[in-house]
Length: 376
Ligand SMILES: Cc1ncc(COP(=O)(O)O)c(C=O)c1O
Image 1 (cartoon, rainbow, N blue to C red):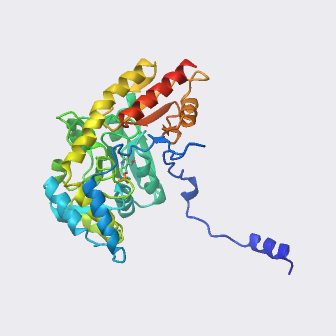
Image 2: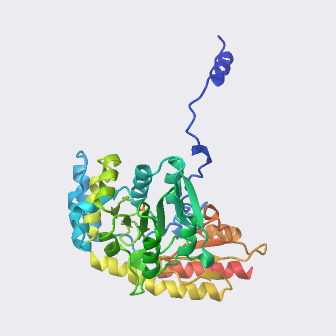
């Protein structure tokens, strides 16, 4: 048989087909990491920690590098103890993931059957929905008037097939947050069989003393999971570590499908060490607190529509629709100046960009470039 004939023959054969719905999923688009022709761009596109990470975490990481032949502790004992002690939690109610992303994934896999649904805000973090769709579940998006979660809108989306409600507080990419009284109201109104996932990825950056990440509420509840990550405050995004605090019944289900070695040795040890570095945590929060209002004011002064107030380590900014001034054009202009920021088409916010709060030099470079963009 000729080569062409055999190729044709193979092309005619049935190919492996993904299950229904997989090819309709939009893959997660990460923030840009490269700028054409610029060796060392300023990356403000992924809400990473501009200060780097704790020296204690780096030392633990380096030490873990000497024992790479060993599988990780499947129970993440050192990290479990550190998290439990730090937050006053029962160690057996913790689950660890390769980023909090994996904790969401495990929850989705454990609780969603085809035809079930999850509920989240319209601008809710894309990671929740991808895992749900992979389970052939529907994703019900609640309106977020003024870019803020509205509990009544979330509740209006809940029906008898809802299994999980995801609420990131503060939200990404909005940066806005809702008071604890609203979180409690949401929880009280949910049917007891629905799990409320409170994602606190940015909670440590909230300055308001009345803010509450829900850990205490979760302690006495049978259907709340609170998640946290080491990616933001601790600057360990590259290591991929997150955790969830859940009722034992949920932990027991999730632990059946969690792969035993999902969190690497360096990740477990560096994350545990990071919890012991309060100076680094404080510096990270202070950097955000110092520059967030400054950035909001500067960007507002350029006539841009800043979504305020952000309580996270980034700000969301709306651009005019006039040609020459659009978010897409600003994104390209900034990239040409070596400033990488986050376009938000994936979130249905094509007129907005999200800027991570950086070091002083980054923030000044950003506002100067944007001033030039708006003057052109
Ligand atoms: C709201 C929100 N939740 C969770 C995550 C996931 O964090 P990680 O998987 O790095 O722990 C992110 C990451 O950007 C986020 O923005």
